Amino acid sequence: MKDKLLKLISDYRIIFVIYIIVSAVTAYSKYKRGTGGYNNYLIFKGVFYNTLQEKNIFLQYPDLFFDSNHYGVFFSLLIAPFAMLPDGFGAVLWNVAITLVFLYAIYKLPFSDRKKSFFAWLCLQEFITAATYFQFNIILTGLLMLSAIYIYERKETQSAFSILIGTFVKVYGIVGLSAFFFIKNKFKFILSFIIIAILFFVLPMLISSPKFGVQSYIDWYVSLSGKNLENQALGTRQDYSLMGVVRRVLGNADISNLIFLIPGFIIFMTPYFRIKQYKNLSFQLMILASTLLFVVLF
Image 1: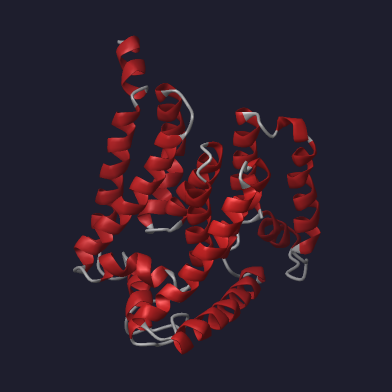
Image 2: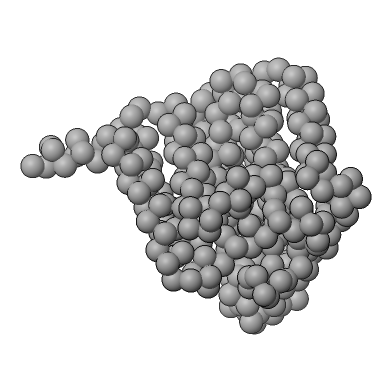
């Protein structure tokens, strides 16, 4: 019995199916609760339609949804295929799609099938929490993993593509550059990065206008600046970073992020002095793990 159970949980295909089922069931259950249940999806959907109508995508529209959007205007293109569907179908397919990207990243990891399975099992609880709220963090995690994996596979263009999708939706996707020192063909990566960045910058203008596109990036900066100030307020329950926890414990909202970011960054960069380890796959994977932790902690 024990051997059968071990064999069962060691098959990554089984846990992958569980992920897909969970993503669909959670999305549908939230949809059935009414608009309050899938409010985050409505915010995402609003990014597409507000872009089409050239309306500020970062303002609140209480007649359509609660809260406001903080994703870049490029996100309008990613959510478009789902936003044009009825809410029930769109919400479910969105959750399944972002889950598939994350699962593909796990599948691409240079691990044995058993390790891939255990990795997926370990992430399941956090995945359920994120899937319940349709969070982009699911796909962002997958993209950060893929950016590092593609560098290991010497696929510089795909790596740049993965990093920039995350960056143009949530700025801190740029941390995918943590694997830059491991790139063999840096010229190809930099060239691909620049070309794709220009393409991503321009693409949203095809469904709106150049003026609106540029203004949206300016508005994005304003939105994120306001969000940062809002997070520092002690009365909110949004900032669960290391800085937010310390500010709450000490009851001091004036503590600067730099007090944590500077030493945190120094600690994060310390392993890069081990230059001889750059070719070591295990070292590259530990840097990837460190990067993912840094995003969560800071």
